[in-house]
Image 1 (tube, rainbow, N blue to C red):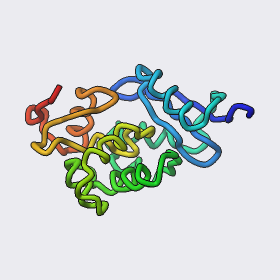
Image 2 (cartoon, one colour):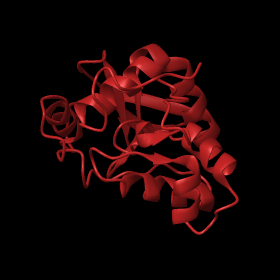
Image 3 (cartoon, helix red, strand yellow):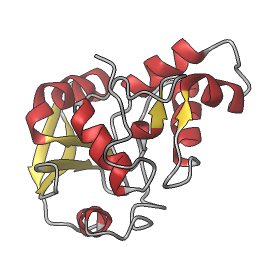
Image 4 (cartoon, one colour):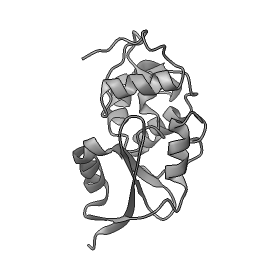
Length: 177
């Protein structure tokens, strides 16, 4: 099969450069550039062979993400996403997008919200496979004790995002390593 043609753009952020990967209609992946190996793995798992073409912000996604970092926290709402995944993963990712800015949920709370109260670990695994950081806000999931656990971009970035959104005060978050 020929490589899948996707489009990439690097945008600045307060947490370091981000790369957006889009198809013709939606955001397929968003990752910090220092997590490029994870991005490559996620794309190859989903698409097989991929060719990334540089492209200006034709869909306006980069501008909306920059606006989010500049303080317009609703700017990323409604960005069209095409994350792939299994039906269960897509259910988890849709539920993540329903967590309001400034709020967090535990893995168990999200599992209950999607009708799978015995599946918090499965929710955690789906969360870890989220290819669209920030826009699908996996950073809004916390441990059952409200501690910050697991974030592919690093726990300090997770803390920053939650503080930026008003879910945490800078000194209130504790990390689980």
